[in-house]
Amino acid sequence: SKDALIYPRVLLKLSGESFCRSGESGITMSEVAAVSQQIKRVVESGVQLAIVVGGGNILRGKQFSAVSASIKAPTAHYMGMLATVINGLALQDALENAGVPTRLQTAIRMEGVAEPFIRRRCIRHLEKGRVVILGAGTGSPFVTTDTAAALRAREIEADVVLKATRVDGVYAEDPEKNPHAVRYSDISYQDVLAQNLQVMDAQAFHHCMEHGIPIVVFNFKREGNLERAAAGERIGTRVLP
Ligand code: UDP
Image (tube, rainbow, N blue to C red; front, side, top):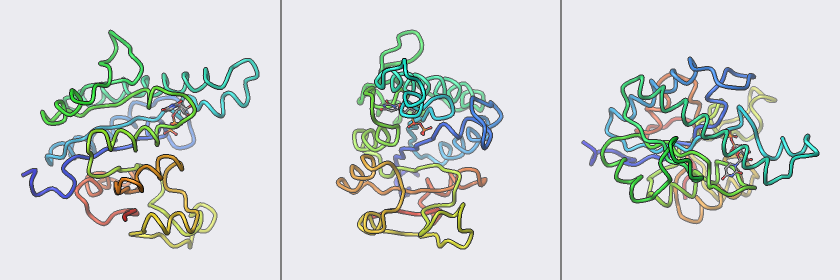
């Protein structure tokens, strides 16, 4: 039953890279279908799941404005937020195709495509067992979907933020540069700061730290990891008070 769950309500941050093949961009539905199968099993375990989707597979505001002289920075960030809605639509169909009921809520109003984000309605959907996909980040430029994930987690009283990545957790050094780098299984917020480790973007991290929201960084590409992370098993790196 839900009472036995370590994390009854989970906020999953799914970055844009979950929507395409490694090293590619755009959307590959077979990748979205694969992650949807994992999400399905989390929902079947009774966990309430809200998902903040990234957009980096399509466009990141900071990068795009840096290489595009005629685009203003806020415009580029709004483009990035719209990219997350494109991903949200893809995820919605993939999940529903897998038999998972969903709602898409956006921080920028888009009548005809999605519901607006309304906190209480979001929670109601979660209570009914629907996966709520949260698009358009915070609705404000200059931040990332990591920050949206941290803020929404607090707003909907999620018990944990799961950060799905392509690495196995948080390492003392970059594991792509040093294959012998040591992975932390548990680490405190303070130690992350003291060692200047990369967990989520700084704003997002500080928000979680300030409000004691645990963060689990894990490799979603390994089959079963998402379920294990959501179930509170020791997977990846847990960042705790
Ligand atoms: N973005 C924004 N405000 C937000 C969330 C996102 O302006 O609240 C923009 C920002 O430009 C960002 C882009 O949307 O680069 C896509 O999101 P993000 O880079 O977080 O995607 P991810 O890295 O998770 O794929």
